[in-house]
Structure formats: C-alpha cells, structure tokens
Amino acid sequence: ISLWLTNVTPFVVCSFLAEGAERGPSIPLRLFCALTWAESAFGLASFLCTNDDAVKMESQAYQKSSHVPKQAPCPKQDTIVQLELLCLSPDVPEVLRVIVGVLLCLTHGVLRWIDFQRSVDISEGKDSIVGSADMKKQQRRSWVALCLGFSKQNWGKAFMYLLERHGMPCEEFVLLKPKGDFKSFRESPASYCDMTNGMRYVLVKFLGFSVFDACQMTLHSWRHFYPTASRQMLMPNDLGCEIGHWVTGSRMPEKYDAIVSSKEIAAKSSIVYEF
Image (cartoon, rainbow, N blue to C red; front, side):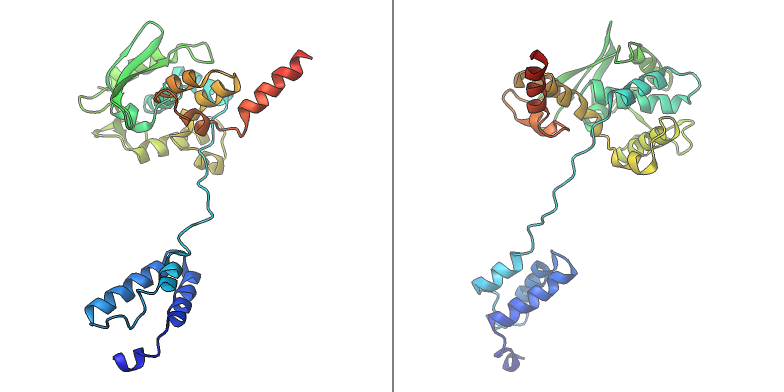
C-alpha cells in the first residue's frame, strides 16, 4: 500500500482537506483525524503527511466560524405587564398561570431558569418573593423578585398561592413537570424544554405573538430586561452587577444589555433634553 502513497504530497493532502470543507466547516479536521488514525493503524509512518505544518494548518483553517451567536431578545415592558395580569386572571388555567409566574420570577428576579428550579427557601415576603440558589461560578446567593411589578398588581401573591396549591416548591427542586394539556402536573421535575414549550404556548395563545416571534424568545430573554433598563437609566455598573447577581466589577451588565449602545444613547438623550 505504501508504493502508491509515495506520490502523496502535502499539496495533495491539503487539496483533499479543502474539498472536504464544502461539506461543512468541521469536515477537514475530521478527515485529518482519520488520516492520523490510518497512519498509526496501518504503520504508514508519515506517508500521509499529517506531520506537515501546511496540512495541520489546513485542517484547522475552517474551524473559525463567522457566525455570531444571536443574543436572546429582551421582552418589552408591555409584555411583562400582560404577563402580570395573566398570572392574576382566574380565566386562565392554573398550570399556565404557574408557568407565567415562573417567567415573572425570571424577569423580576433576574434569574436563569436553572437558578430558579434549584432555588431553596422560597417564601413570600411583604412585597417580594425571596429565595436563594447556587448561581453560576458563585457561592449560594439570595435573590429577590418584586411582587408588585409594572402593572402595580400583586402577581407574586397569586403565584405563591398557586405553587402551594399544587404541592410546590418540592424538596429538591421548585417546579413540577406540566402535562402536555397544561391541565395538571406530573410528579417529575420540570425541564428547560417543558418551560420553553409552555412559554411559547402562552405567548401565542394569550399575548398574540406570532409563532416565529414566540420561538425567538428563550427562558434567558426574561433575564435581560433589568440589566438593559439599568444601563439605559445610567445606573452605576456596581448596581447593575448587584441586580444581575454578578461579582463587583463584572462587565456582564454590558453584555446583557439587549440594546446596542443603549448607555451612549441614554447619555446623549439626557444632554439633548437639557437644551
């Protein structure tokens, strides 16, 4: 087999890898790994040129994608107001009202879904829902979600009542898994996908979202509202970090800002207003 392999040059191998890129950016590296394995398995030494620098560079050349991950869209204030009123509405099935309440906790608590689901000691205070969770890269931290939101209605009290009515929060997690018909809960814990499906159903069924717009929203979208608003209001970065449960001095408030250059726009608008 080594007789015809003597004609294999680094140029030939590079061309082979480049042609593979037409099938996808990860293909050249996979082909390179296959060639490396073949050299080792069949004792081909360096006949396939895998030690050549040009070949190595060609195998990695297509790994850097120009695709930039799209930031989760930030909900509008009107949407949050509608959810608060929906959570209070007796005409909405209770399972869906619980799902809405979770979305409001993610919004007013500035929480990730997993932070909420793993929270402990959740209780209702005089004007807020409080809890604590082992947040990403940090020790256990407390969080607070205001019960009186932008609608000035106490959605939090209704939400906590519904949780207790359905046997939640549970011992090792908060939310039970909603059934597919949204009429009751199962005995297993709710997952990210369960909540995403419930969120999209609520947005389309009750808030008039198109299916496309509802699918653009994620559970992380709700966490963006307060950090974006704090930057538009020109709050100090330390307050933004406190709101989002980040360490002091973090640049996460800037990354979570859902509007490009919102702080610059707000500052310039303040100047124009004064004149």
